[in-house]
Length: 267
Image: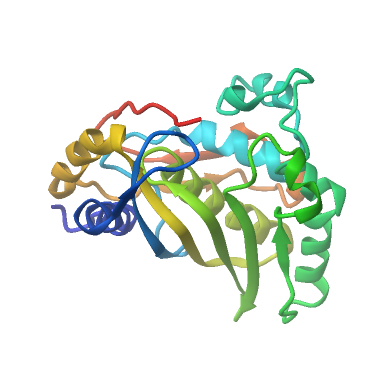
């Protein structure tokens, strides 16, 4: 293990190992059984390190595109995502090209990003800064009910802190994406309101490993001692409007990793 092992690898692999050793094994909606543990958590100081796994490749650009589709375009139209050459939602696309009233639809419906940005600028000690995608009324009309469904925001000493609450977390495929893209979101929101990035806390209610991902994750665990230093997140200077960021403005410098670990998504 290097002296500068990525904290993302350390915290993530601890949860994976814990699930494999102590997880509850049972059936679920997808028909592919999982090992699961409740109430798992990771926390990162974004001023010190950017969280992305190095013990396997994480498609950073794809994660950023999905994030901007949800939070910036506030779209539920999968075709908009496909225009960016991103296909992570193809499996859930309906005949009308959308995912129903899910994800970005809920942000746009209630102008939640605009409200958050205004609160951060005008009332940063507000304790009600919450963005929620879990709209009970609209849940029946969603192709997939949101997994990463709520963020809670806090400002302390000029730093923007964010807690992401995730009801369901696929440790093999989903969580590496979510942890990285929401860390990017904190940086983008912080830049937009003149704050420094602070703590990012990721809470997963149902952290699970699909049985057909076990071998790949055991391979990743075997790479633990080969984990590499975290890369640097670089966001182009001069952009301070949340709605002006583009995927090409957001990149990693020095991202090295141990290679891809293919896993099948459970639909």
